[in-house]
Amino acid sequence: MSYKYFIYGILVSTSFPFKQLKQSNTTHHEDVVVDLDTSLDVPSESLNYEHWYHTSSSHIAYSRKGVAFFVIENGIELRCKPYPGVDYQEVARVLLGIPMGYLLQQRGMHVLHASVVNIDGQAAAFNGLSGSGKSTMAASFLQNNHSLLTEDTAAIDLSTMMVVPAFPSLKIAQDALEQLDLPPRELINAPTDSRNRFIYPMDDKQFYGQPAKLKNCYLLEWGEQLSIEPVEVKQAFFQLFPHTFRPINVVDSEELDTESFKKMTDFANKVSVYKLTRPKSFASLDDCRLLVEEHMQQREPR
Image (cartoon, rainbow, N blue to C red; front, side):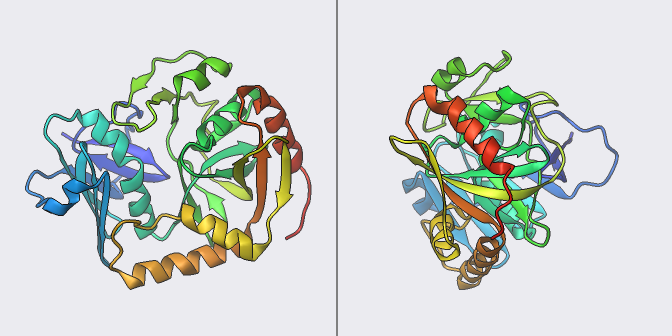
């Protein structure tokens, strides 16, 4: 039996259900196939890392410790071998992150670690290191009739600077959920999430299901005062590059790294980048959201 889902604007057929997503009833032929493959040969060295990568021009192998081994090929096939004892829904959750990001990269998209929200038809991206508050920041916009395009992995068409919608759910910590005035939902556990977050399913009003043009990227930083400052193109390149999807443990494909460099250069020259500094407190979220809303309305030529 197969299951079909629209993920990042592409039709994905899977051999096991993704319970956090809504199935599609389309009869169209799939763009991407996701299969369980117990015959995959897992390199022993990969078991020593929380995240392990191996790249070539045609495929990327990725291991997430305690979850599964994934092979992503040519932007059309993603095979996975779950590790013993893991629940298939945790495999699905992890698959929708890093493995899906690399598949989108193979399909020609520019892929960033970022949360993206739709604000009056324009996209605002929030970039930052793990724990910098990307998901909480994005979730705060859902309280004011804005909507989410993606919570963690942003896929961008560089020819149009359009961000494609991911899927209607976000990972959020319990304390953040308690502070935000979001409609109650049945949360889904994410047992291997490093920060003990839950999956919060969204409805059609909270999720923006159409591509939106990226206007601004905000680099998140903690600080005493709330402020937005422009970042020049050269500095934007260096600050955004670490958030670009590219293997970080094992890189043996010069071709892949060169392509990442070219795409990041193109991206940095096409988008306006700002440093968004805000206090590390839930109390500042409303003021921060209002500041970004006002800033997104301004016309600031690059």
